[in-house]
Image (cartoon, rainbow, N blue to C red):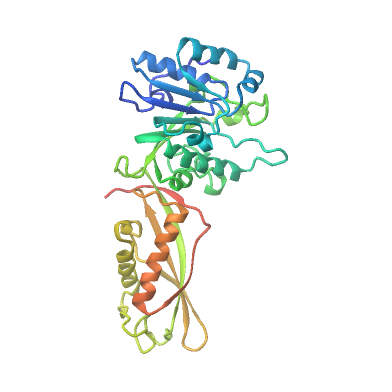
Length: 366
């Protein structure tokens, strides 16, 4: 039932553990096949692990739904001494394990719970990942790691062996960023290494062989500053910011220069106005200044009433060291634009992310 999980180099069994007494929590383990294999592997490595296995369904439902669940539960309780919990919602771990911390938290092939009359849209899976990452981060020990296994192509990271349009993925990096966590590694694993056949979201429905044939990807995540090394994939945001300037541009006058500038405003250099905007933004961003590595680019100008003009700039935020969630980058962008507006005597009127979602890119280290 769970042979094959012991394949050499399988990250699902190794979990990057070095301590002899690790605390491991397994979430949503359906028929507990993975927990059985993991407990055996830890024993073979001589680790006196504190393993806690959990499932979303109640025990009676598990036994009825999965043919091997009863045997697996008996093995874990009787022979392995594993702590076993049923009816655990991975989105609220602190509710079930209040005050406890784990070195590793594992969630294999998460699926959003079935809602009667509701289609199983991809947005629900994204919401599940967001809620799980936030919940798990609160139960994670210092320097702990999350392990999330998805079908190849679902994660939407630059390391995925199957690249799909970001809007057709579960956007794992965005979910992790909401919890202040970064992707550290994404390792492809043959589905046969799981040692069991994953099920679909409906009772007694298996995931189709064609989907399983794509393989699995095991994602390792940790807090932004644990360790401090950069992540392999950047999160990228593209913002369009519009400013109103009380100057005329058709005569070659630059923003902040001339009679229309506010009293005490700094003049933007004639030859490189974007460079001046960049400097003001970097000052406002402080420790996060590296997330705006290039100067804003003026895309278009539009004449308003009188001598007023609307100027739209493109800002590119990207980082492999910061968990750039939508909320975090939105605050950073607002700080940068307010600093520019104050320095140049303009009024910041609008700022929004293009297509609204982060684009993962392979990090480049200088």
